[in-house]
Image 1: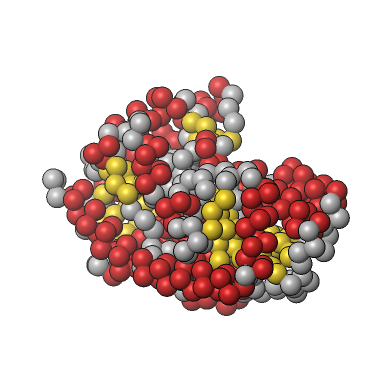
Image 2: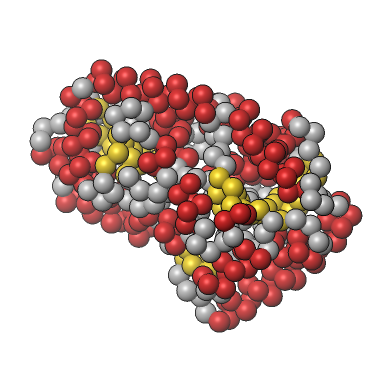
Length: 387
């Protein structure tokens, strides 16, 4: 079998991690893979290490942060149609059995699959507007119809994601497939030695919380910062380590909250890092405050690290966490509730340790390479079999 992937970026985000995990699993089953992507950044280095052929093709997404002008829409459409031609030429020679779009944010792979008469798999990592504020350049009704029409199978990363798309896509095409997250389980092996230069800030307070992810409004880091203010007023010695690249406007907003509540010794911004492991391992509690996570890779990484995870009861978090068993849930946006959960764990370290131990055990048993490999290969076989 041959599978051609289309990636929306050449960076090292969550969707790219899933692509690499998928490619690793397929390679072990002697399934050939190639990748199209718009550049050659960190993902290119990872693909070279795996010995996977990739092609740079600067196509554009069909989802944007906010509405676009008619000119931008026209330019994007023309670019994507024109860039489909070299992909078609290369794939007619390579003859893939499946074309696989690794994210909903691009449509080039779907167009190419239709033009070369190959089945198309769309991996739905995101909800779109709900989790990232993304909008289809052609409007949601038309775009959802296109996803349905141009897909043989759509992979949903959680039941929450599948339920969302079932309103627009033929439910028989939707398959829920939880990621393996096996690369996160062996982080030190997947991060090149020369990139592990980030220094974990020294601990100031007795208890440390960590929040990993892009510093942006959808991730709601401000809720965690405001929770620190409540805990400070209550005399709880706790600090917050925020890890991730910042959106400039939102970072300024967080800085203002820190200054307003005099939290300079309570909130630490680590910035963007390549290796998240030491930052997560330095903490006692992992927080997930997002408005809506389609899956929640960072949540799973916290579970795998054996930390007590406190997550908003939004998106797929309730599928990953069972209250008081392998983590804690609070009502999304309820800052007082979040502060109460942190305070409770600070007062019961033995319970926090028990939750972390159970979280690690359950996560290691389910989020495995073997389970994911079996399920993804079976799914792809079912796509190819009718042909």
